Image 1 (cartoon, one colour):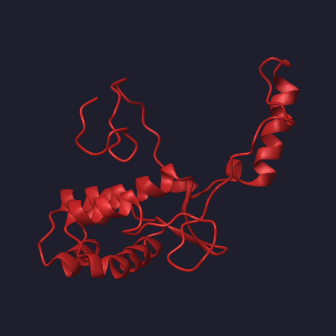
Image 2 (cartoon, rainbow, N blue to C red; image 1 turned 180 degrees about the vertical axis):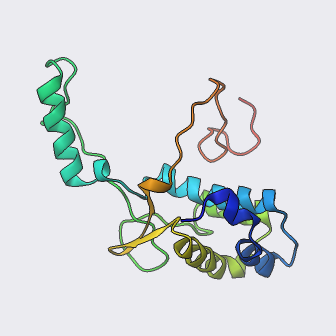
Image 3 (spheres, helix red, strand yellow; image 1 turned 45 degrees about the vertical axis):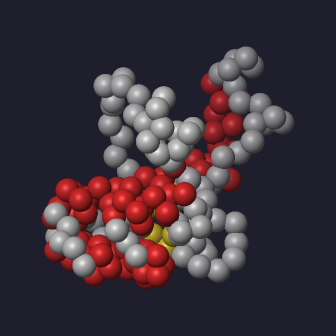
Length: 174
């Protein structure tokens, strides 16, 4: 498995960006672009994790009821299970898409200079690259980020503005 920062240093990783934008991409910019894409998938729960499976959720409910009192335990009659979603490259289905039809895809294309007509091919090349380095896995009907590749780090408490979720759009004042 290749780490994300190691991947960004590899010329191979920058080829999809350079191929479609005709610009040289330094390591930092390539890392930023791949992180943007993977963050989009992570936020949309396109993550292969046991706790996001139906069986994992049932186990969480069971443990919650065994170890917590009734006020803190999850209520199996009212709790809605949170399940992993699947990233879809094409086709129909209920999954996560990254294209010019959604805000994240449009923002990505603008930010990194991907021409509109090349966006689908770019995403396909990026997915192939991430699959080769085990930063993405093929699952039934699509792709997910393997749980083992996620890195949890403590923040400093400073809220981070997410331009895709900030009400008022990109560049709007808080």
